[in-house]
Image (cartoon, rainbow, N blue to C red; front, side, top):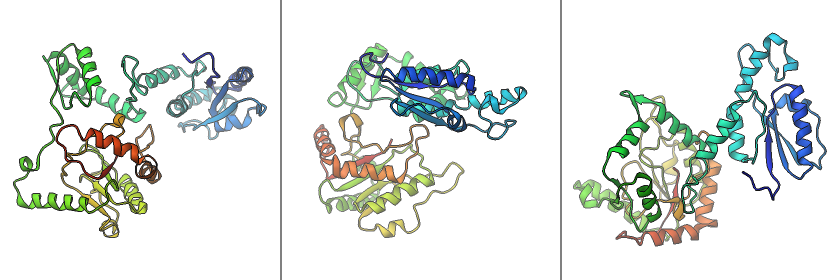
Length: 380
């Protein structure tokens, strides 16, 4: 529940009938007179026809995109726009406000969301967002770990999809439940609170096995590959300490051609030296994904793009330790723009660079990792 000692932010969603919207707006005015902020949600045409409250009241109209529904008259967004036998189509369109409302709840985070009885899907959305997009209350130590809405969607898909008659979530839960102990790729010095939490949750031993970072000799016997790694490290040593942007998205990340173009565009425009690990893969329609034409020639000497394995012995990634800078993205589909890449570059290399450098230097002191002069820019 929101703190009663401070002004609240209240979102209000009436049914698309003026006999509902007007009373909701009157109630909003009364609440706003008490000093609270109101976000009044409806569709664009309905908002245009509603009376405007006085500027002294904190009432903001939020337009939700009205979905197109087959059978619904164009520009019909309220019951007054339709004969009675067509109102069911409006109800179908109203149900389509579920996704834009979820976007509003995630970005604006109102304290309360009074809604009409037609919008039965509001409470489940708010509850799910509260459960998954904020740190769980049962974690006893400070943390900012939570899911983005786009990650919640992927999680739900993974939990519901079945291969061989069982879901991926079922496989995970049963494996954890039936085993005698859990082994985790981590270490007590780096993640003690999380390891203890896992033991308390599952009531069984949790054994950290370290980072298991491979050595060059264990991975490579091919002289050509060893030469490539040596060349890579020589390139890094030529640059000023703390000046290189390291870009990596993990071996399982599947970038689209648009995202590759956005990243390349901003790296090129930044003027900063960079080291980009780009794993080759195909797009969603089996197309071959490529760097923008001429990109590597234009950044030659300043930037390097590696499409094979690179030795990340000195890179430990944990956002809470301020060693990773995630790229801001759309919370619902996970996409990002070239501007968000540029903002992350400024944050790491200019505005907050010392914080990230210091944290990386401290954490790389754990174990025998050889320190290096990299700054880290990573997207999850």
